[in-house]
Length: 174
Length: 155
Image (cartoon, rainbow over all chains, first blue to last red; front, side):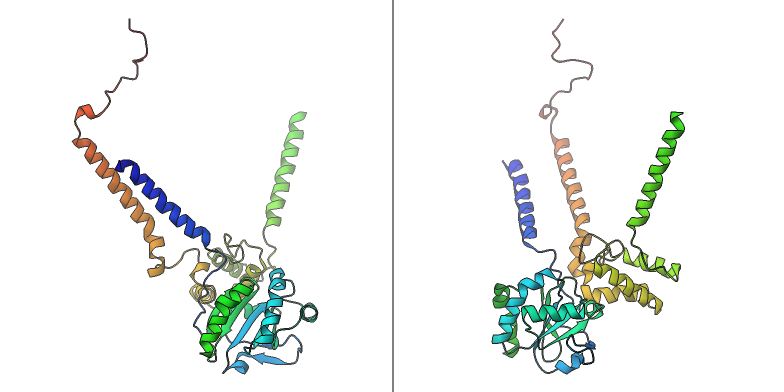
């Protein structure tokens, strides 16, 4: 009897591994930046080429950094959720306009609404590289000490906002 | 007269194929320094492009890969070593960017797993053979010589 149960057992173990593997999203690579200081940046804002914004300017408060671009399709799905969230939340959202054209980015915000206190203009994507951005949109939660506490990869959905982002924010405001 | 024609056609095909290979490579900015370019490409083939995860940064055409190649180029120009650049990448994207991940607790199973499986298989084989050795002759089917057809009508 056991000579038939053995292969069956092995098969079930294999199926178990595969089932777990199927449930994982290979695009979600855990960021090594979690609980590390957010990389410094100093760049012009999207709205005013002459106005420079730096990471230090945001020290002392919890803030959200949302990486977006006008060429990014998934950002279009996420944007209304951010606009709505910005209206009811106290946490400031800053945008990182990643590898975009200034006119395109501005036009997009005009059409879709602007949830950002300010958007950092990262034309050549260097700030994006420092933040380990590989798929737009991405969203970081940065605490008062300038440490990255959470990273969300891909578009924010109402569900991920409720189950992931808001709990982290609540905990930080503790 | 058919033969030279055929040869010509084959040559043309070969040349066209070569042109295709040449075009398939990314048109890198004409390297001021071919040696540096070679070092950059060598390093880039060790790094995974996170946008198209089964390609290296060297052969991916994703924007991010193009940017990262440029980043590596500039870092090499600044005199940074290969190891420094590798850690620059893992600081940002994690060990996942390395096609050859380092050996540490989180990756131990990845490195040792195949060896463990091989040892298990060899052990199982050993046990099975040992058990068979202990069996008497009647436990096995009698062997029929190859040149005897057991279904042949007896003469």
